[in-house]
Image (cartoon, rainbow, N blue to C red; front, side):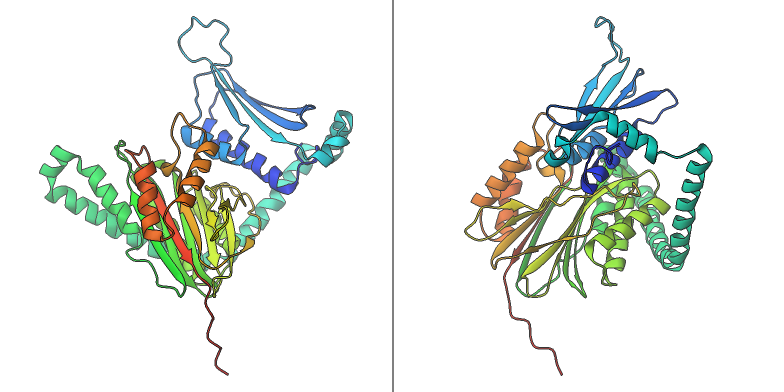
Length: 422
């Protein structure tokens, strides 16, 4: 349908990702309908999910979908005929994706329907054959990567076994602490911190600073993480957030960070790293989704490459100019959807790069885009030194946060690379 009305590949991926995320979150044995509607003024394709029971989409799913398609609208109790009934009895989600102006000019509903009939499978057998071919291709890819994934899985299994053994040992030794202060949360928080980098690398012309703050009001921990690695292609910076809050979310985060370091050491570009992580997550942690933004800074610090899997966009602040968000976007990890190639940007010397997780700016009663604008304005008016900037943003935004927070800043200066030896 998206292709028939003229949506480009990026919007097709966004719409497919949104429906996949909500479908996974709302999947029940009771019926749910999905209807598509072609709107005229303004031209858009609207997908409407409707159900008649008490299911409710999670905040995480709605937040992820709204980041992809801001015009998403959730209407609880949409099927309620009698407002005197107090129990939930239905709901509706509208996902609206604008149609490009050029495609909208020649949009004809009859032609769209005819195109759908032409492109549809001739029979259920043809559809099954097509799915079988896709499955065989996926199995061949999995077989080709089997040895590498098995080795990585063994390493992760050993790490997890050691951490869980430490968790069990501390639980026995400090039972009195458990009774008074809730040891599970404290140990889980310690576990999460052990998965985060102990130090940041030193790279020529780069000043790095980071702040990690756990949620102040939740009894569980999240899966926020960051990474900075020297790779064959330059300095790789990453920030991510596993959807959900639990000990398992922290374990999934640790697995992804280990995998990211292993794949990055092989010199893969950012979007290939996302594809590998997506494949690994689907194999070993099915049902989990994660947002990750990866930025690769080339040696010399004159250019960077961005690949973003459903995460908040990084903010680039050139000296003496207005900051701008690098808004390249792709689907969340864990959905098995292809990721677009990384996008390159030129860096002016003495620029600042800022990467954050949504716990810094998202609140229940605020508009995400207004908060992004406030973050940009606050960062632009703040210090031009990474450590001081991180402190300033935490002081302004992180007041009893409902979610984990990561603020990751990088000061980037050009430098002359030494000549290669003959």
